[in-house]
Amino acid sequence: MPTGVHIRDARQQLFDAAERVLLRDGPSALTSRAVTDEAGCAKGVLHRHFADFDAFLAELVRDRTARIESQTTGLRAAAGTGTVAGNLTGALTDLFDSVAVAIVGLVVFRDELRSRLRRTGPAHGVPLLAEAGAMIASYLADERELGRIAADADVDSLALSLIGAGHLLFAGGASPDAGAVDKVVTAVIADVVQRRLL
Image (tube, rainbow, N blue to C red; front, top):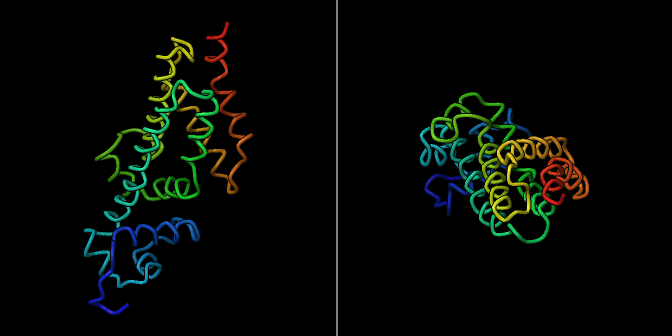
């Protein structure tokens, strides 16, 4: 692409290009050249907006993590409606789309990126998954307050179990059907839901 050509919303264009490269070729293929080639722009465009490639990758992950905030709002608004298992199944299915699974792989693959993200985010766990766990825990806490799960339910441990199981289900390549996700969710929360009903 010739220099001097204005690119509308260059940051988002670069993020979208990075996600396409990541999905198609995996984390090892994600380089600044691959991203700018995919975006159809000069390499200097990336460096005009970001200090270096790791800064770009950190912002890519933060952009994806910010989407969890809106998912959190929607999930917490569902507390007290539908079924707990149904709400969690929907949340995990939305959370673990192919891009999110690929972003988790990227964070695990690149040590410097993980270190950079931990300096400004949760100190433990895998960035993105840690925020997702907080989302699930906050929803479960709301359901506990409403009496739909046991008063002594350990929502943090349940959230970790659900995020770990969800990631394993979706990381295998083809996305599982809703029935498979619901089966796992129901098994993880069965004790706290059943005890409430006894």
